[in-house]
Amino acid sequence: MTRSGDRIDSPIANSFDTPLDAPIAAEADRRTLIDRFGRVHRSLRLSVTDRCNIRCFYCMPDEAIRFRRRAELLTDDEFARFVSVAARWGIERVRITGGEPLLRERLDRLVALLRAIPGIRELALTTNGMLLADQARGLRDAGLDRINISLDTLDPETFREIARRDGLERTLAGIDAALDAGFPKIRLNAVAIAGLIERDAVPLVEFARARGLEMRFIEFMPLDGDRNWTADRVVPGERLRQRIEAALGPLEPIDRSDPAQPAVDWRFADGSGVVGFIEPVSRPFCGACDRLRLTAEGQVRNCLFSTVEWDARALLRGGASDQALGELLRDCTAAKRAGHGIDSPAFERPERAMYQIGG
Ligand code: SAM
Ligand code: SF4
Image 1 (cartoon, rainbow, N blue to C red):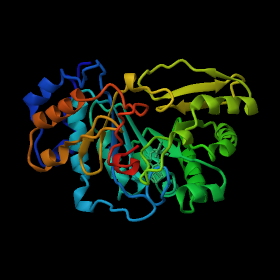
Image 2 (image 1 turned 90 degrees about the horizontal axis):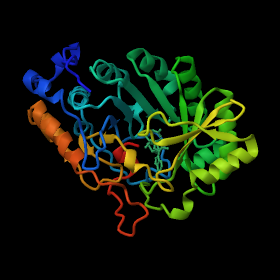
Image 3 (image 1 turned 90 degrees about the vertical axis):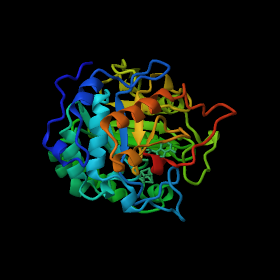
């Protein structure tokens, strides 16, 4: 795709410490981030903080957490500059995540900066929703397109068991606020964990479809901070789908318009709603992956399960050119492995847990 019309001339360009370099930008306009397996990368996940207001056991440890100091995290302008370069290398979709991204001060300001970047067609957010009641409207006004809200249960006790904190009421208020703010296509995400999800899956689907929201179930991945993941706690999407069908009626597969999207979506045959399954463990979708990730402190990763990182912060803070940042993206993409290999005996868990990468 050509981006010759996408010169960076928005007001934010003037706020960068390092000026954008016009001839290099023009050259980069012809570039794409393509790996050895022919996968073209169009999506970027930005983690904007590693902090969180709860402690989901599948993600964070409960205690002895060493959060990054604020000075270690990228600033809004650093994020925006990085995304501007990435956009000129073909990145079109950005998802803001964390940790809990709504804990970052003035997230709406960062959203507005990213929204102004030419070439970014979609700007989305993943949140636990607890702070959305106050922020949903401002984020929508700042230009956020889509929102995914994590909701594992509708039972306050189970919420406390999972999150090791209270918060269900606030999350539910956040979902209402997102609906009121007019976000199209709000999705709810639940991590499917054996021993818990069996009880909650059907009520969650009923809750979502009563509000016109899509419910998505994500298989539990070995990225929990406590390192307690075991394969027998993974509930395959297929098993969950059968349970939902048995309780609520037949589901039909929806054709995938975008093969890079991780979920397999199904609609109720009576037209009453959509349920999605993200199945990285039972049916890995690495072959169509188009995602790169930037951690809150500026490390680029080519996979959730990557054990190697590329230091963009050093470039951003060291006066590097856009060319150098683009080459870092290119090198990181080129080094991507064919798949995560969770099911292989040689699988090596990354050092970082989910909250430190950005899910
Ligand atoms: N705090 C926000 C939230 O919970 O939505 C954003 C960050 S969270 C790390 C992003 C997503 O990753 C959430 O939907 C969460 O449920 C999911 N997640 C966290 N740990 C996971 C794990 N070990 N396996 C699968 N999904 C996980
Ligand atoms: Fe926090 Fe999200 Fe991780 Fe839960 S999944 S601990 S809400 S970052």
